[in-house]
Image 1 (tube, rainbow, N blue to C red):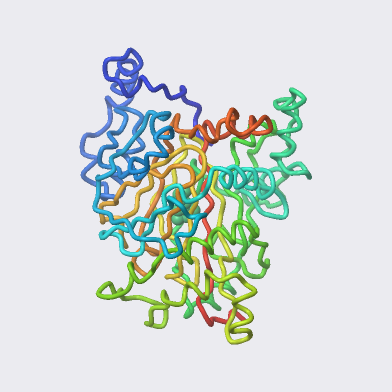
Image 2 (cartoon, helix red, strand yellow):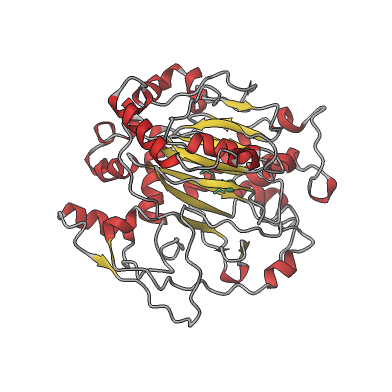
Length: 453
Ligand SMILES: O=C(O)CCC(=O)C(=O)O
Ligand SMILES: [Fe+2]
């Protein structure tokens, strides 16, 4: 669990303010005995993580690309928060979306010559859809039967943790009710969980060749923590870190556990991901002279994503019924970050399909997203992601690129997620989001034509 820290004050960005001077004194006190040589051992990715994570001095974001600055309609989001990057920090190019009908007015997409396969669609998700997704993530999705990080350790309320929290809060009793820990039935004491949202272990990249071997490998259930204490519903809400989507993920081996079956992907989320894939002009990324090595079976399939991923299921089945497996987003995770949480550099390589687009939706507070290359030795590009932004990672280079979230930017909840703009029942969501970011990360596990049976 992240340590409690003093709340972030905008004055911390002003070197003449007392808050800044106090933070500087504290910083020198705590770092006095640190070896000055540590930095030389860091990989470029690690150095970037350290830079953006630092509480003091607050990082300079002038080398962070902030696409919201190119959109006048987002001025209130930028001005309201204290953090901003620069619109020209790194080379990028706007590409036209394919069907720019009335509902798409104003929506844009950007690609990055240094990161072939990466697409950012700023503010792609409307304000209403953002609110719906936040409600869905906390209330409908982060509960049984979907697994969350808390299930293994606590006997969570039947109605779902968030629903219980909102009822207790309405009655003024949010801190009153305790949730009991699960009793460990194993004689082996599991190692303590490292701090931060995600456990990172090196796993073997999945692929068609080792799919059966990885599927058959033992996936023992995780043991409840022997040190978990009875905890209030309100405190557990802040300790929610992830909720599984679709195929069940086994954290111990970092492989999917297909034996557990596949959870449903919510319809609106599936439609949203499909609409992103349908609208991106893939030839701009992969056509012409932009060929990439490393596609499954050696043959690029991006020119079929419109059909195989983007089409609505009905149309797909009518056209090519029985000819190939339905290709859809079928797995993923909802990440819940509190403002001091980070997600270390990692590659998402448990999916058998290593090239199909991964769609990632940002909600709530803004964050710094780092994306590098195939090793941590590639210096990553920092991108400022705000609520409603969608990132797509696709193709062999980008889908297996190191990436991470070193910082959630304090004080950046956009005005459209404040209660004044969203109605009374939103208050509890606003209170949560003021110190949080939610990321909905959707993937496709199986490549076209691959039959897991
Ligand atoms: O929070 C994000 O934007 C990225 C999350 C991510 O990389 C993951 O879930 O694998
Ligand atoms: Fe990831």
